[in-house]
Image 1 (cartoon, each protein chain N blue to C red):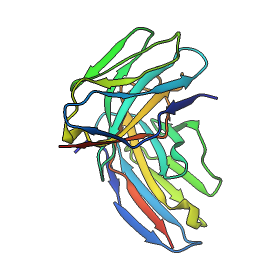
Image 2: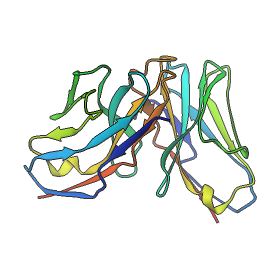
Image 3: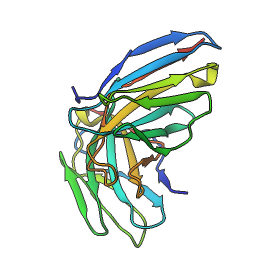
Length: 114
Length: 111
């Protein structure tokens, strides 16, 4: 157990639907990062939050959004889902805002859009 | 923008063989460099890191040296084990601490 908890582990949904992925960071970590892993695109950075505020944005689609709550857990919302959104979604956390002394990754949520 | 290029896999080796997985990067400034490992069905785990030129990261018999002159961070191990079979990702971090990953290299070690 890495200390980063992601739920659910697996999700199967239909095109056009909306889903929410949840991440609880390791205790004491203030930064949360979301990554998408697919066979063709590899690991793509989506978005980072630090202590509740958006810190950096990567290749995140407008149909996707995220937030970090006061208890530091984070949610990634994916809407108007398309077949191409099928992927592994990873959350990672770190204690620092800038210098990464090693991210800790969760085990991921596998999203399948049918 | 920043990018990381890794050798394509899979890399297939026999147990006790030597391993080298090449990684080169493009970045502005002076990034930190990392190797992560992903075992089947699991998330990524930090294997080793180096934060400045000529630093050598090491862990579990794996080593990588930050070479600024060749913009490389090759992963090496002198004697691989079956349990080393996994996907290995080279990554760099920018000044905002977000990680940019290479596409990953699968390593398959046979007994």
